[in-house]
Image (cartoon, one colour):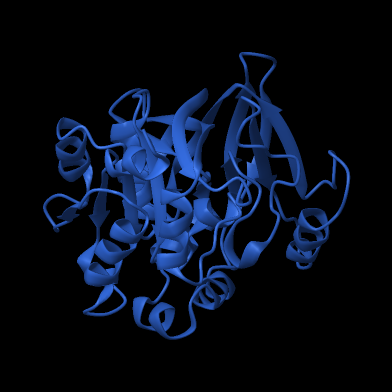
Length: 310
C-alpha cells in the first residue's frame, strides 16, 4: 500500500467556533488542504451557544475519525479536550482565538491557522498532561490544559473588554490588569500533596500545566506539560509598592523568588479561601469559588502535530 493510499484512509473532524472563522473561504481551503494531503473529506462541525464543542467532539468520536481538530479559541480547545482525554483519538489545533495558549506552548504556528492545520495532517502523535480541577468540594469539575487561577488573574479575565480584545488582542488583558490592581488580599490555605499547609494573605493563586501565558510571558519557567507535575504561583503584594515586588518576583530567577511571589510544585494541591474569589481556567472566567482541588492526569491527552512544532 502506498503512503498516499494510507493517508486516504485517514479522516479529520473539525470542531469550529463559526464566529472565529477568518473568512468565507476558510472551510473550502481546509477541505482542499485535506485533499492535497491525501486525506478523506473531513467532518465539519460548528459549535453553538448551547453546545460550545462537547457534543460535536462526541459526534466526531462516534464517526471514528483519526483526529479531532479544535478550531477556535482556548475555550473551544478546552471543551474538545475534555471529551478526548483518556481516549485513543488525537486532538489537533487550528488557533483562531486571542490567546491560543496551548498552541503557543506547543510551539505551533498561531499566525496562520491553515498552516497549523497542515502541521496536524502531516504530524505525529504525542501525549501531554491535563489537569482536573474540582470546585467547592465536587459541585463542579473542570479540565484545563494551560493554567487556572483564583483571585486577581481571574478578575482580569472576567473584566477584559471584548471589543478592545478584538482590536488589540492580548494587550486588552493588560488594560484590564491595570484596572484590577486595587483590591484587598484574602486569606488562603494551600496544601501540596497533603503536606503541611501554607497560610498566606494573597491576591492570586495560579496553577500551571504549561509555562507561557498572555504575551508569551513565561509565568511558570519550570512547567512542562509532560512531567506529571503542577506548578503553583502565589501572588501576595504588600504595601504601596507591593506590585513592584510581584513584577520582580515573576520575572526573577530561583524557586523562592521573593516574599511577594512564592512558587510551589506537586502532583496535586488544595486551595482554601477565606471568602469566595473569582476563578478562571485557560482564560475562561467561571464565577467564584472558595475551595479548589487540582490534580494532574499524566499524559492523558493525545496531540497530533509536526515534530518541528513539538
